[in-house]
Amino acid sequence: MVLSKVQYEGLQDLEGRRHIVVALDLSDNSWRATKYYAQELSKPGDVVHLVHVSRCLEPQVSVQHSYPGASYTVPELHRFDEKQHSEHIQGVIKSRFLPCFEGLGIQHILHLYFDTDNSPGTAIAAILNRVAEEVKASLMVMAAHNKAYGLTEFLLGSVAEECTQHSKFPVVVVRNWVNASA
Image (cartoon, rainbow, N blue to C red):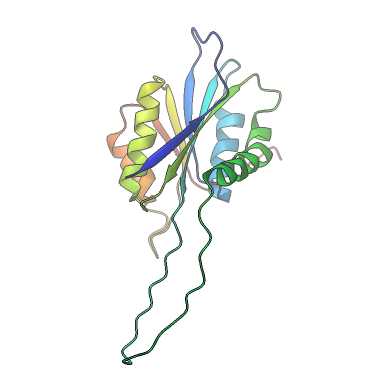
């Protein structure tokens, strides 16, 4: 797996504060899990580590033909711009996820990783677990994605499954939470 990392929002004195890892994938389920943490589990002084792994695959073209002498002109594909993609992801997270923490006295740090190999869920879970270990997390929060057909109420997505089985920290998996007070 080839990854590059962007990390920002420096920390101040964090003695005695809980560190919470929140896995983001920009989906509605991920937003609900973030909102659940903010409204149901957060404490003033928490430091939230928002972790997002973004798949950034270079476009590829494969032309196959069986007619002898056939030729094709393939237009040049655009190159992946890591900086532009990073700015876009940061903008989405700022506008969609950060409002969940307004007025709660919670610091946040964004850990943004780029996956350029189309890695499996186990590799993404390993990143989440590594960040949790690095920050000595008190808790990890993530969404369930219910991608298994017909068994959605029993199975988790591959990343959530891997984290719940291999994390050294408590993992809260949120499934379709709706704020009762809204």
